[in-house]
Image (cartoon, rainbow over all chains, first blue to last red; front, side, top):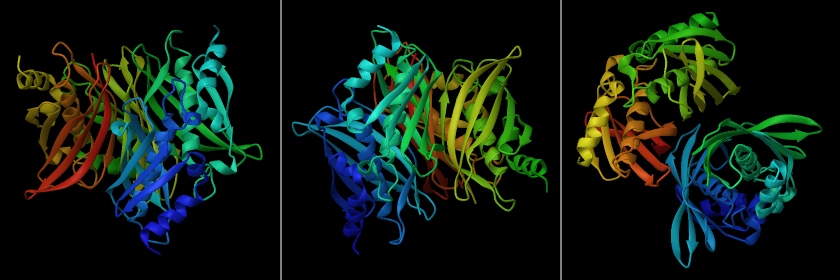
Length: 135
Length: 135
Length: 135
Length: 135
């Protein structure tokens, strides 16, 4: 199974991704992009995208980046993830670009940048770094 | 406005909480509890509760704990949050218990423990620690 | 080899611990305590104990806590560690109390609290949470 | 006072930096480099550079990067810092390159990469991300 097919299959099994309207945009070795519209039902109390939306697509983009460097019979689970919320996430949609910082057999260290897109302009909304485990 | 009324009002404005089915369970000075059913549309690819659900209610429980020690004219925003996923989140629901680690005028350091409840038995599913800012 | 002997032997091989004047105070299953005097040559620019001192003994206390739950032929290495600096570390010495949050064959999740001791009174100076790996 | 003079003065007051043999290599707006020899008295139990050395110079490089974007009458203190240890720190010296991720009046979000240098070749040994506060 090719890389993108494998990741699309796993992504399709994450019902949370459908609930949040997240879409897998691109897959390359060590780098996966996911985006989601900032729907009115995904806000926090001030009317911006909820941190959990940035976390959800950032964590998934980072985790699937790890999966691209992991043997085919494995899944990836997140062990820990830190998110810095850098700016209010205002706009039409969020886009998360994940990447592998350090591949490994036991642990894959990953990162993701999340941007809020408004009128075609990107604002750096969040930075994630974390530890994923091939299982 | 009393503490619980104020926090319920803010919680009610977070549309993401409704989308995820999260409920505010209790409010005490420095300690807030939030729970959510592990609905089938909130899963990750292996059929457990998605990490983003644990993050969403853990971050909110921690953040509202901070709000209980913050002047009434302020809101709380999360600056950064780290989540350790300790065990697969299997069961009927997740329960997040937030607390204040260190109050402060500029920063409030917070923590939350998230438990997965199955047949009345709790498993420690996640631990969060983070930095919130009164604004 | 009993637990304490084994941990004292490993601690003795960490030349950094001697350089910083750190001492292993107690070893129990899942819990290790380390302390260090706040010597004048271990300060930051404002005259408090340097964050690196709190990190050094907090990370070691957490890591050796993990070693207490790890098979005898393994060492523990830290994969990631987050430290919250909660209060200026002023006083005579720092004391770090490490503990295991979640044991595991592949990963051991750990935590440590660091206190600054002044005139016999403890101030909570730092909180660490991290991921260690038996190798 | 120019930027470099100001940072050299603050660095000179950090007695821990002298104890660890750390040297300020370069200062530019939003970017500071610090290095330290991996002396035999700065090792962990397996003979590599101790994580606390990578933390010490990474945290300082990140913090001084924040100072370059902060008004002259302020100091910078670290509120929280996460370090990922990516590879054994083997070699002659460590070099830490700090940078500002997000400037701000209340918080400055920072990062640092730490490299171990052996025979002129750099290995990415650690990645730090954290929150600093102008005080």
